[in-house]
Structure formats: structure tokens, C-alpha cells
Length: 424
Ligand SMILES: *Cc1c(COP(=O)(O)O)cnc(C)c1O
Image (cartoon, protein in one colour):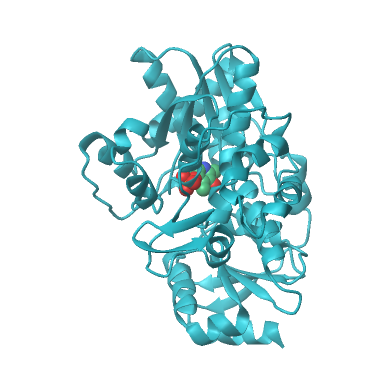
């Protein structure tokens, strides 16, 4: 299928949109509506992924390779852990870097590798405040024709995050930038604005607005809803902890594509711009506030432009609520004592919002997207649950590797020099 920017413009093939990331007019490429899948869905996550994604890839150069791309990307599971009869955690953290971003990053990498001719090289340039950079590095690690340069703010990510980001090597270069996350992002933006630099290094973006990351996230929402249906409990209502609205937008796409999903509820931390927008219709982006659920500390959600372009009345498609740090702490504690389950601060936002909905009368079967493994946020979780959180094997493997990050000035000249050295 062809896609078009949220701001209009010409249609481009889906794979061109995946290769370029952002639309040239500054908008976001919007996947067009597809007819609901009539079934059968097949068995297992890769089959469900292919069923959900096939209509968008119809007619595209990547269409014949979709099954292979899906098999290569969905190599770990997305199981539902039932806390009680009507409440499940959709565990999205079984990938190499223990957060849901592994799914999108791997799918994007599998697409980009196929879209790069044998005699060309691409360099994925990514600024990260933590989770994204590690997922992207892991996804592109040792892939032919692709290089990754990760920029993170030195001293402003957790020790475990810093280790993860720097544990790759080979075709992954990790730079600790003297500056803030905003400085890293500004540096990446300036690099992409430099046409010569972009062409010379085949720079591509892997940020969360990329369709190559967004679309595959619809797969696990569909997969989980089908698991609920198999228990005879359809539809599945889903709470999605949200920052930039990528994961949650994909959940809406899964519902539209025919997955048996009922209500979709966004859960945010004190960065409440989405709940306020959906309640009042008035969008008021702000600077972000620091919270315990720091991967959701977003004051101007990038995918909101997609939501508004796609649904004339967004509040009819989705509702939202927010919680503060005290509620996050209380929920992490209560989930451990009541169910013996450890959850990360982002997942806790989702559970807290669900609890409020239930008190207000919500019925039925609910899933909460568990966006990261609690061991990634051990400095928050462990003091609350009073014991160590076991590290999952893929993450343990990464943390056991040697780490190497290079210092880099927050300066385009320094970045250009570093890129040139890679190309030599
Ligand atoms: C990125 C992230 C989120 C927010 O996801 P969006 O797609 O930006 O809404 C939530 N939780 C964790 C753990 C994340 O890494």
C-alpha cells in the first residue's frame, strides 16, 4: 500500500516510508485504514504478525519477504501472565533488551537490511535517553550493510542502561555525549538536516515515529487479544502505558485490523497532556516532568499527530487517565504482595489506571501492556518490593559483556569526524 504524510503531500510506497522515517513535509506517514481481517489468523505470534501486517505490505517490494521478516523479528514471545481471572499482564519484555521496543527495532532492522543494495551502506543514527538506543543497537548488531551510532547523555542514564548501550561493538558505535538528552537529539537533528552528511553516510533515523517500528507493534496486541478470545473471554480491553503514543497507536491499529480488542485506555504518568487532550479536546504540549516511569516522560507526544489525522473524534477511539509517583510506588508494592508479581514503573501506571476504572464500574477482561522488565528499573522496584529482582537471561547476557562507549562533544563537527572515521 501507499502511505501519505499527516500533512498531505504525495503518496509513497510503504517501504520508501520505512526507509526514510519522517515525511519530507515534517509530518508523519500514516498507515491507511485496512478492512478487518476475516481469519483464519493462524497459530502463534509470527503468524498473527503476518496476518495483521499483510494488508499494509500489499503490492510493496517487501511483500514477498514479509513472512521472512516476521520470522526474523518475532523470535521471542509475548505471553499473557494472568494475575487473576480477569486481569492479565501482556509481557512485552522477553527480547534482548527487556522492553517492548525490541519488537519494533528488530522489524525495522530486518526491513532496512533488505532495502539496502549490496554496494551501499546505511548508518542508523539514534539519540537515546535509555531504552530506544539499546533496542536499536541490539536489532542492528552484526547485520550486513548497516551501522549504528548511538548517542546518549553521559552520566544521565542508569549504570545498567549505560552498560546495555555500550555492550555491542562491531558495527555499533556508542558515544557518551557531554550534554543532556536534548543536546543529543539536537545533534541528530542537525546531522539529518545536513544533506551532504546524510548522503555520504546513508544516514537513517530509527526514532519512534518510523512506520517500521510502529506497525509491527500491532502484532502483539492482536496476538494477546486472540489468546483472550481462545479462553472464551472476548473482547480483550487493553491498557497501554504511554509516552509518545507509539505502542498505543499500534494497539488501535490492531483493533481496526480486526483483532478482538474492546476498549483501549492510555495510562500516563504526571505528564498528562494526553488525558487532558482527550477530555477537553484542547492540546497543550509542555516541557516534560521527571517521574519514576521515565521512559514516558513526554510533554509533546510525537504520535498524537497521527491520532488526530486518523480519527476525527479521537476521544471516541480511545480514553486516558494518569497517575502520580505515589500511585506508581503503591501499585508496585501491592502487585508484589497481592500477586507475587514484580512490575516496572511504566507497567504500574497501567495497573493503577485499570484499578481506578474498575472502581468506577468497568467490567470484563483486561490486559495491561507490561512494557519493560522490572529488572531494568531495579533501583525503583527493589526498595519497594524489599528483595532483588531476578535479571532475565537475555539481559544478564548483555550485562556480562564488556562495555565500551566513546566520549563525544555535543558538536556537529565532532560527530562528522566520527562518522567519517567509520566510513574510511
Ligand atoms: C518507550 C517506552 C514506553 C512508552 O512507549 P510509547 O510508544 O512512547 O508510548 C513505555 N514504557 C517503556 C518501558 C518504554 O521503554
